[in-house]
Image (cartoon, rainbow, N blue to C red):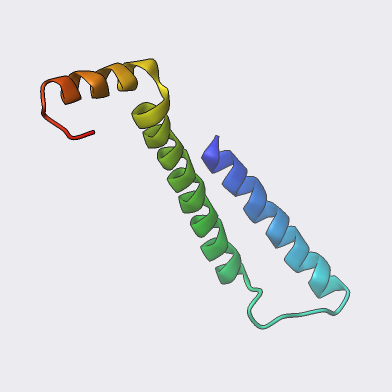
Length: 80
């Protein structure tokens, strides 16, 4: 799903580049290479956000994580 969203984003930005070109607006920095770089960056950002959420949820929210933390504290393997 992340790859599909990145592909759609890249397609939209490419269409935007073509639209600006057709009406005579150009930016030196807005090129197909910068679009590809932005798509890679946005894909990495989405992956980072998903992973941070998963770590947060599995560490602080889930019942299993809370029980595991209590057990580790009881066994004095970690501090409170």
